[in-house]
Length: 81
Image (cartoon, rainbow, N blue to C red):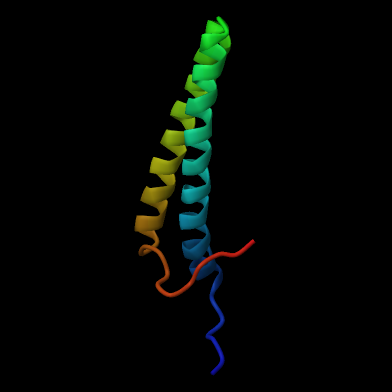
């Protein structure tokens, strides 16, 4: 059975959930490193990483809104590296 070729917008609806998941994994890492640098007395660096973490969270929210406006994720498809 051949699989239907996805349109460019459908491809984007497959990619966006992947981007959100990827960003989410980085948010977890950033939080860990905030603790590491803070324990080493590097408060300024910790604050900057926290700002980056907030921007990642904001980016995820915007991607979720974009995906919703495109009709949501394409069922039955996933993005592979």
